[in-house]
Each structure stands twice: as C-alpha cells, then as structure tokens.
Image (cartoon, rainbow, N blue to C red; front, side, top):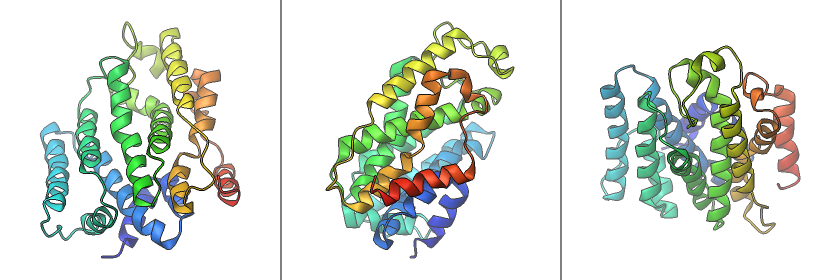
Amino acid sequence: MSWQPCAEIVERADPDRFLSAMTASEAGRAALFPLYAFNAEVAKAPWVTSEPGLAEIRLQWWRDAIGEIYAGAEPRRHEVVTPLAEVIGARNLPRFAFDALIDARAFDIYEAGHVGTAALDAYLAATSAGLMELAMRSTGGDAVDLARGTGWAQGAAGLMRALPVLWSSGRDPLPVPGGLDRQAVLAGKMPDAVAKVLRDLAGRALDRIAPVPRDLPEDAKAALRAAWQAPRILRTVQRDPSAIFGRLDVSEFRRRGGLLVRTLRGR
C-alpha cells in the first residue's frame, strides 16, 4: 500500500515532522511517514473523545494491530497499519518502542499530572525519544543514543509549546513542587515554581542534543531534522520561561527557512 495517505495524515497533524520528512529521499519518506502517521494517530486517541473508556479502546486497537504485525499475521487493511508493517519488516524495528509509546499515551487520557520529574522524563523517553529512535533505525542510521537524546529534547520543547492549552484543558503535565497555581498560569502569569521547573527541563533537554556525525546517512539526518525547532525553543524558555505564553512560535518564513538552511548544510 502507498505511504502517501500517511504523508497526508502527518501534513495535517504534525507539520514540523512533515516538512522534515520531505527533506529525505523517496525511500526515506516511505520509511518515515508511516511511523509519523502511527504516532499522530496514537497521540490523538486521548483527545478525540471525552470518555476515558473509549480512548483506552482506541489505544488498545493500536496495541492489537502492532501485536498482530509482530506475530506474523496479515496486517490489517488500514492506511497506516499496512505501510507501517512493511517498514517494521524491512528494518526489523523493535516492538518495545511501539508498545512503550502507546502505553505512555494513556497518560494523556486523564487529568492527573506526572508524579515527579522521573515520571515526566519517562514519558518523554517513551514518546518523542522512542519515535526518534524508530525513525533513525528505519532510515538506516545506527546513532540510536543520538536519536533518543534529540527526540527527548524535541518532546520537551513540544510540551512547552503545548502547556497553556494543556493547562486550560485541566491537565497538569508539568510536575511542580507544591502544585500548580492554575489561576496564575491561566491569566498568563509565570509563578516562580513553574519557571524553575521549566528552566531545569530546558537545560536538561539542551544537554541531550549532541553533534551529528558527518558520515550519518542523509535520510537519518532527515529523521533527526524533525527536531530542528527544539534548540531555539529550549534556549528561549531557559532565558524567559514566560515565553511559553505565545512567544515561542515564529513566522512561517523563518520556520521554513531554518529547516532549509539545515538541509542545505547537511545539518
């Protein structure tokens, strides 16, 4: 089955990953888009219904689909599952990364926050870091540690961009000692306790970003390029945590231009 429907899903749901995948070769796109579409479908499962039970059923559908692929069964005729099975088989991708990602997304179904920094770190490791590892492996790269560190940083940056919306929806994904002052953050104010957590998270995420080896396959570089906005976002939040209130996005020209420069320089 063609991977084009996967590309269309990613273009709608995850514009940054769509643009970065488009810098890969035809073979690289065929590997990346099914992975990114899988991630998009799993990530949205907790948000398409207000009933936790129904959201859990959606995630279980994906657990079953992945289990069938690894059991050697005929893949489900589905616009994402079918091409994903081809990528998994061609690159012998590890099942644990898929299972961990699905299980972690169950956290998003409920309003309870992460209990401590370790829980948030594990969530980022299972979601963004795990996806970046799969992307690296699917494009012929072996820099798994680099991929996981870059993906973790990307996930931290993405969380920072989403925090105001998450807070307004009743979610508290950021573990803040003493609890979140919801009234303050909903008013666009930055409590000292939240600022401290954000600066710490940004610093730890930046520490995980490492130089990319020059001999890494070009398609593997395209996989890493999905995180091209993360360093800027993390440095901005490290300087000024209140930037999460509407000052992290840049113009479309600057956004696309930053990716183009990295692509032309092989970064």
